Image 1: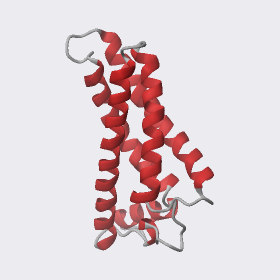
Image 2 (image 1 turned 30 degrees about the horizontal axis):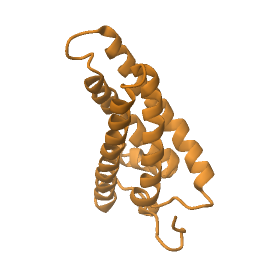
Image 3 (image 1 turned 120 degrees about the vertical axis):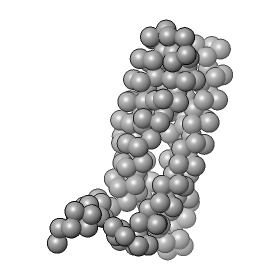
Image 4 (image 1 turned 45 degrees about the vertical axis):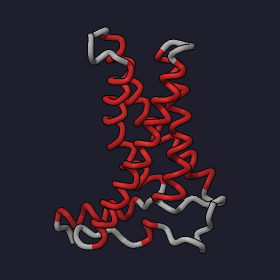
Length: 165
């Protein structure tokens, strides 16, 4: 892991409703999306293999936990560039809590769709995609502003969009 002195965090500059702050946010969102796709691939691969040995609902818990570890590490080191040995315990626990909530939603959608036993939508891989997409927005917002970012920046950005002083 890098130290804060070696690499300035991507989220060091204040957010702005227009200009470079917003383009920086787009870049972070795209990078986060790429890491999410990698996490999705890890999740899907473990789920696919695990389905040979167990029930989809239990295997899905294991695949989610593994994917969360992968995405936490890559997001902290490469996307938000703010993960250090000093911040690791707080950021890991914050990430697991916030993204865990998003993934509970993801899991609930998955189990619900699989349990419907409808021809297309109940396929475990389709249900995986629907649940993952629904959780992505929640997980990105929590990761960006609560785990690796600054809540004050979000408030300033919202005030700028509304035109508040």
